[in-house]
Image (cartoon, rainbow, N blue to C red; front, side):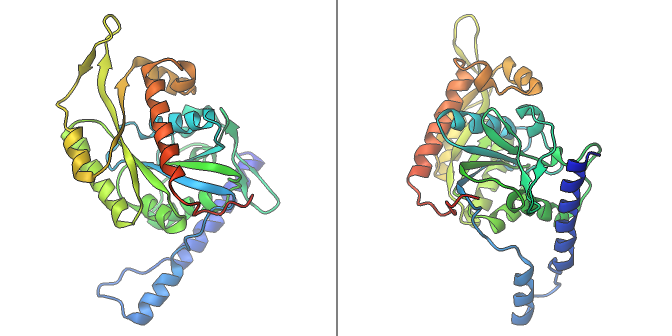
Amino acid sequence: MSIKRLACAFALQQSSNQWVNTATRTMCSKPNQRQAELMARSLPKRMPLPGVQHIVVVSSGKGGVGKTTTAVNLAVTLARHGKTVGLLDGDIFGPSVPRMMNVSEAPLVDEHNRMVPPINYGVKCLSMGLLVDTGPVVWRGPLVMSAIQRLLKGAVWGPLDILVVDTPPGTGDVHLSLSQNVPIDGVVLVSSPQAAALDITKKGAQMYRTLQVPLIGLVENMSHVVCDQCSNLIEFADNLIDRYVQELSVEVLARVPIEKDVMRCSDAGTPVCLKFPDSQLAKAYDTIAIKVIEFLATKPFVNDRRPA
């Protein structure tokens, strides 16, 4: 393990140990006032990230619907629109941002023991995949929440216009830790069009509504293919999206087709919106980026705008 990587891992472990020492206890009965106060002390404080104006989460309760692909191409497209952008890989157990963004070097550590995210394609990137050399991450919940806290607040993110956070499937530790640590400006939902995926995505949306985080809209991913010969759209499933977005009271940000270049570009570490800027995919991600920018323009700057 390199010195830089060892320093990052050591700092992360220190943060993890601190969390374990102060983690809340599971109560069999409803806690009294004194117990509630003690439990609240151990929770992280929701504080803005210095120098970061907006935080946007890409989420879906369902796995395999293209969250990371959406997050990567959204971040790169936002940067092409002149925004200063960061990309945080919130998937602790299955980080894939390093491969898709073609970054592999461990982040440097400054004199304040803060990680300096590497930059590629004009986007600052940070992921657990840059801190762990090999092997799986086998951690319980408190360590996962501590890792998210370290990746968020133990790094030099600013100055940024937008920090895009890619999240894992489910509605568990990572999502709760994000909402507890920093103010989130909005969530971009991602789902494929079948009912099995939409049912779980709806639960993820309801979770963020419960946490009082606004929903920007929903990306309908992998819903159709465009014929190479006649350019007609071939749908793969019944159009269930319209019914679900009505129930969620959100709009469809874009309908993203399936294209073989997505897999090739992702494996090669080149976002498809850069490799094929005139493709239907690139146009779809451009539409998503514009709508995200328009949404954020209507919100006040709740995050700390001072340089880091």
